[in-house]
Length: 125
Image (cartoon, rainbow, N blue to C red; front, side):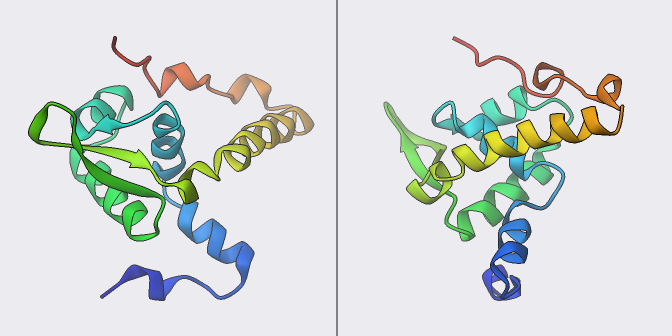
């Protein structure tokens, strides 16, 4: 069964359905840096399990946000890369970050905000 059929018909609900989940937006945010192997994503995203990571990557792939491609120089290796549709989320994700900060400010909850570095590690060289 394809999960795409489960998305709501209203555009705003559809967008939220694609992005909903504890880790999907974080995975997309990390992939904005460029292609990553599964193990690289797992190492960069603090607290995500391999099982959940793979489930979310499959879902994002089915939604057309990411694609799998062979790693350069490694015939068996696979890496995930944003599709043009996934890349089109860049301004949306940036706006969501800004709005989340604004919301915390308006609710006097800024001390509860967590810096991205607490969840996403820097990319290894």
